[in-house]
Image 1: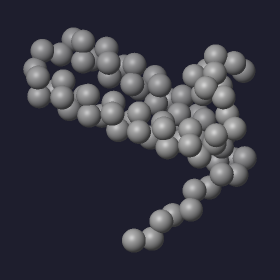
Image 2: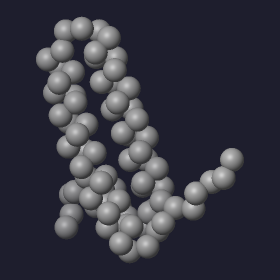
Image 3: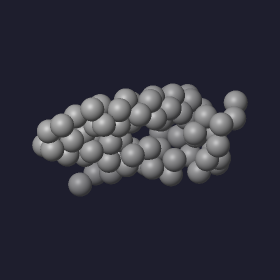
Length: 77
């Protein structure tokens, strides 16, 4: 299986930061939806979606280890 080399250029870094931050908002929205949901099957599906997004966030953080946790979480400019 071929492994694709990750693009770590400045433009890629900028785009990944934007995507990472959008995942934060999406996860928060899904968590709100889970709190309102009654059906267990739907809650499980939403939980798996959150899990996949968190894995993607971890992958992105590993691509750019020079960015601090505060920057990722939006605590600094």
